Image (cartoon, rainbow, N blue to C red; front, side, top):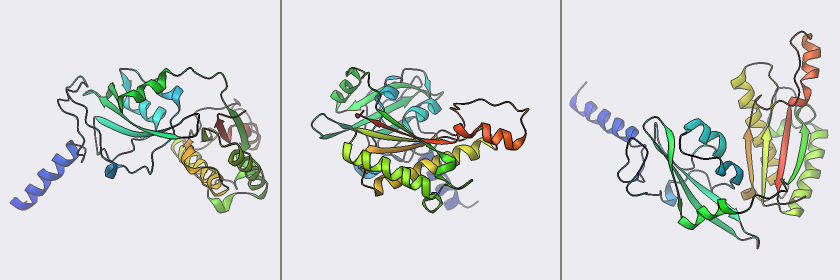
Length: 264
């Protein structure tokens, strides 16, 4: 390897090590503490306009939480953090009672073992959002049978079946009129087949339903989509059933849930 190639390799390794960012906090220790928190600039955001977070999920963050647990609660970071980054940054939207949307930046700093240890907000007063009383009302939930919604194994907009399309149109009309604080779309799969493939399919179906709702007039900024794969079954079925009977038994687990927060 010539000297120039070695130089490029060193630069690439350095970029990976620093996460290819310009927002690394000052004085980051192995224990996940910092001397000065540095937040990224808007040009580094790749999740357009941020997302509306689930406050209950934010309240579950605590020192020692694993990186994948953070991803499970908040999703992937909204900025280009790079490989093996020890800082994840998010841009969250909060809709106030008067309908105004306030944006807040949120940072998770990990220790050398990639466990979250430091959590910071900008502006700092955004942390007060977590002090708001937990509403007893969890919103309105819509359940759509995935078998009625999509052709078998499919997930695209063109794969939505007529009955499922009609059901989604009714739901979208209600949501567009009600203007909920946030709409969360969850895709679910049964346990048949490969777990990774089931997770991917559930995410793709959730994304498709999200796009459909937005196309029908639901505020795009309020809708998030998340695939949960086979992780939350609502029915258990024994393996002693024949394949056809097992598929039928597991049907309730193949579903799309839409949770609208702020309406009843």
